[in-house]
Length: 119
Image (cartoon, rainbow, N blue to C red; front, side):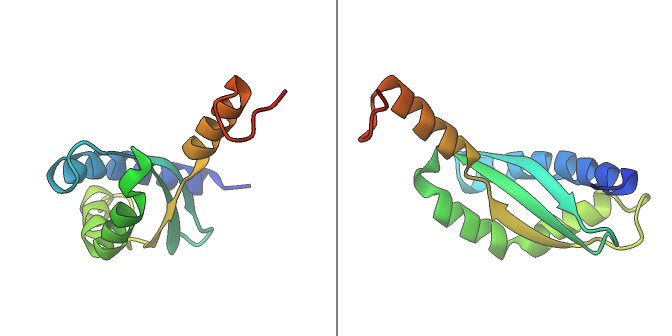
């Protein structure tokens, strides 16, 4: 279970990165929506796993590669936003969140639209 400090830092990072992704995606990948679904911070606050959801999913591999390539940019944005609350900015690890894809797959299966209809 995460401590209150981890939860607060995670929420702060989620808010800061959501805004940064919104602006960045408009310039770099117009027509795509990037959202930060979850942030998990290590107990010592030295690292953070950032779960990113991408819609539509057609270019998700390309977009994730660009996000990982621009990790120093996003870390800099976090360091400026959280400068008064933290001494150091954690290392960021970006992970693709496929939960929306799974939900869509289940929904299609329930409606009988997929390759493997249920019932």
